[in-house]
Structure formats: structure tokens, C-alpha cells
Length: 499
Image (cartoon, rainbow, N blue to C red; front, side, top):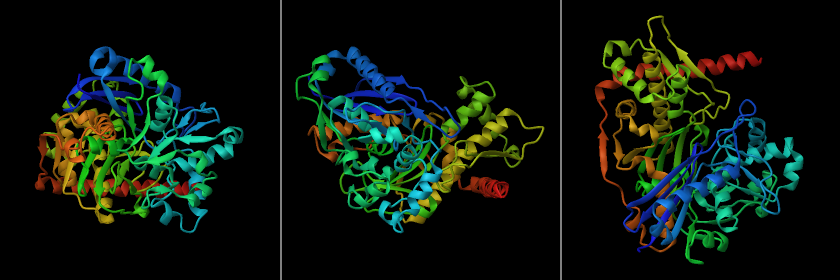
């Protein structure tokens, strides 16, 4: 049996496992849902042990589906949600639920962290956002001092799974930038930033490149799964967006992806470090050596439509709702009078870095149906990406191509709307929904020496290209201007209320 490779994606809503062969043909795959806890306003947490149990279930399902292929496993790559803080004691036991990327509790700590060093932004290449890891740890130190006192290791979500697979404490470049402890230009931990976060290098894992070998499966797991001892190498892996980029071949400067998942991401590969921290652009290393990336992030993307569908009792009929939106949008006369929606349901990152931002409907009239409101939700998400494109251009990054991936990529209507709003072509790759797990598997192939980067990280076939309609700009631009004004007005009202 030829060698096979496994990609594990530690997502916010599910754990995905993807087994491929040397030709990158999918042999087996599995997905296991995980839950989110929101015990207080702004909080978002998960149980790391639930991730682990879901990984074991997903891997077992893959092994049962293709036992012979699974027995030929040679490499594994890890992808995962970024920025989450997993705190472990000296024996590797989890001390509290992981605080996630979309948790907004630590605004005070983020402000204090950034103010603690006059050159903080220059060192971190990013502003101190509440979603990043360091403010979470400072919050624990302030509010849960006994937990912090016991803490000996702090791992990101996928790196906790690596620890459970191997016993090794390892981190990698693409995820490390979101901790605010990383020298992104130098691709190493920064002692000054670590000290500002109240820790030192003993708390974090050793750094490797995403395509490098980081550890081996533990003997216990190898025996349990019927794998040869010391036969399976674990790649450094990548944060979910960098892994998705590797999965669709966005590995050279100018190549990018627009990801429509729970959150939304505009990701562009760069040949050097570019930053635009004053507009909340994320700058980090890519998962491959010698490259970086910038990201514009909107916190509510496809999840905004799911939220609205739940509100109107169509939570299990999102496809039906989109069909109703298409019928509504078929009448151009309706569009200029449609409501406008700002989808900042859990705050917003790019371009505002505002965890207190809110969702807003404006222009609602008695004649508006739920289809008109759903149209506004989808359009509002597209406007968030328009802001991301604007910030990306402001940073000096130039896109030559852009793939569209994620669960939202199933809607052709939304894809055309996005292209028309941003006035940029979008390419839908074959297999758009397996990007992060496939990227992780590709990194596993590289770590196992199964081929060169050019041989492994090729672009997929283009299933569909959305070309922007220049005539639509006159429809969307006034509404985009209104969208931006709505946020500024709401921010002003919040500021006045505080006074």
C-alpha cells in the first residue's frame, strides 16, 4: 500500500479529518461537531478535552472507512482555529476551558498590554486585539490568579492536539504571530513581548516551520492504531487560514483567498512582512519558509446568515432562504430601497478592532419581508470584505488572484455578489470546503519528505470564476457608503452613552 497522509483541522464548530494518498486523492474523511460555551457576555470557551475526544472519534472513523490506507499513514499535519489560550499545569493537565479567538472579555488587558511598551506595535507587527492570545493570559492572571500560578505551558488549539498526539510542546510560525509574543519578521519568540505578557520562553513551545517535522506519534497511539513505531511524522502545521491557503496552492506572493466560514478572512501571501496595524490588519508568517501573509478579518460572516435564519425559524433551511433572497434580488428596483445591515454581531476586527461593535439594521419599512432582510445580511457581509480589500490595498499588498473557500462558497449567488461588491474576480476551486484539512495534509506530506513544495502545493482546478459586473458598482457603492456611516454613527452613540 502506498503512503497516506492525514490532515486534522481543529475548527470552532467541528473537528475534521482528511486522509489522502500520494496523489492527494481523498481516501476517507470525517467530521465531528464540538460545542461552544458562552457562560457570560463576550465570553467564548471550549473544552480542550472535547477537541481531543472529537479527534479520536474522527480518526477512528477514517481508520474504519479505509483500514488498509490508514495503516500506511506516514505523515500528519495540523490546522486549527487561531489565538485560543490552552493553559496547562506542570503535568500537562488542562487548568481551565480554552478562551477562544472570538472571546471579547479582555479589552482592558489588551489596552494595558499595548501601552506597556512604547514600541509594542513595532515589535508585534500588530495592535493588541482582544482576540489574540496574550490579553487572554493577562486576563487569567488578573481574574484567576490561582489558575495562572499553576500554569506552566500555554498552547494554541492545534498545538494542544499535537501535545496529545506526541507529548511534545511545539508551536509554529503562522499561528505564533497571533499570540503577540512573536517576532514575525525574525520568525522567533520575542523575549520583550513575552515579558510584557507576564511570561517567558518556558511557557511556550519550541518554534518550527509549518512544513517541517515537529514530532512523532507517541508509541502508545501508534500501538493503539496499529501503526509502525516511529513511522508517522507530525508536521508543524498551520493556523486555519494559512492551512487553507496551502490547501488551494496560495503559496506565492500576490496569491490570496477569501474564506467565508464562521468568520470571514481575506488572506494575501506576501514575500516580505507588510503591516497596517492602525486599520486592524493582521500580519503573520505564512506556513512555508520565507513568506508572510496579511489578513483582514470579519468576525461574523456565514454565521451572520445562520443567525438570521435561526431568528426567523429557518435555521435548518438556509438554502431555501438564499433562494428567496435570489428571487428578491432579481428585481433591481427593490435593491436600492432594501434595508442595510452591519453584521458586527460579536464585535469586529478589521478595520475597526472594536469588540463592542453591534449589529445594526437600518432603513426597515413595513413592506420589507424576511427575504429583504436576509438580502441585507448577505450584502452586509460582502461590505465587510470590501473594507478588507480596502485595508489590504492600503498596506501595499497586491493581489493577482483570489480563491473563494469555506462553507459560504456553496452559494453561487453570494459569490457573484461578493465579486460585484469588491470588483475583483473570485475563483471557486474544486474541493473548496476541504481547504484547511487538505492544507494540513499537504504540510504532513512535506514534513514526511513525500515531494517538493512545487509538486505538493499546486493549485486545484478552477470550478467556477466569478467576474465582477462593473455596472453593479453604481448600485452597491451608495449602500456601502451608508454601511460605513452606520457604524460610525453607532460608535458615536456608544461613546456619548458612556459620557
